[in-house]
Image 1 (cartoon, rainbow, N blue to C red):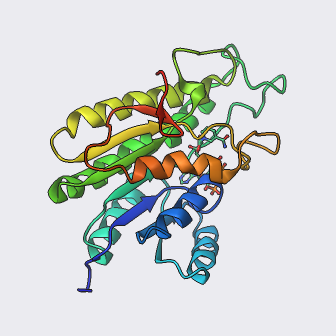
Image 2: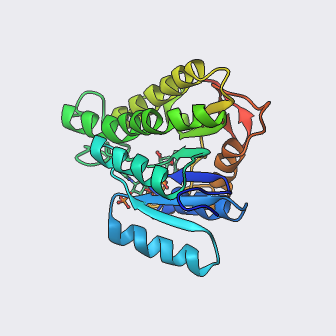
Length: 245
Ligand SMILES: NC(=O)c1ccc[n+]([C@@H]2O[C@H](COP(=O)([O-])OP(=O)(O)OC[C@H]3O[C@@H](n4cnc5c(N)ncnc54)[C@H](OP(=O)(O)O)[C@@H]3O)[C@@H](O)[C@H]2O)c1
């Protein structure tokens, strides 16, 4: 392998130190993909990297705070110098902040959500994926290959929109809009951009009552990250099946 170039496909997973992100990184690496795991906390990221390296997987680590333009630019520089390519971007990092300060256990109401909560949620769940796409899509266009997976949620579906958890819901609806816009602006470049919902998964975010295992949640992410060239773009999927916006 030439210095600064990877012969293998390269994937970036945001928020890969735990939960769906960590398992997504593991399963992509098991498919002979070099995976750059990222974490906003360097210590946690290094622990995750050591764990995956001990499993014999091809893993690199780069700190990444998805809300920071300079941190995203540093990831771009890292990719250029260490890999020279990027084939897959999984925008997985996300926060669910509505619950904090909620008056009941069902999540904050639209009538008491603060702009602080809304802004913090949008910064991670929407602006982060936007910044990552802005940074990495030019390289994907040059390569004429890219797969971008925006990890969204059924809670962002307009078709079944309900009350409570407004910041999270709005952020995922907006992320779905970003998916459509990115897909439209990458037509003709063999870049496929899709939103996926992993279902309700037993992670720190989903909680112990969630109905799905991490493996079940990750399956749809891997599907979208490894689509063939004639696969869909600009869609919303759960378990590889289209779901309404
Ligand atoms: N679990 C579910 O039931 C479910 C359902 C639908 C959709 N989702 C979506 O799936 C994705 C992953 O969820 P999960 O269940 O695995 O959640 P999780 O266990 O809470 O993990 C979230 C990850 O995102 C990282 N993160 C948060 N803010 C970040 C930031 N500003 N910059 C960089 N990293 C940041 C966290 O880092 P730290 O460790 O430093 O906090 C952590 O690694 C999220 O987008 C979530 O909305 C989850």
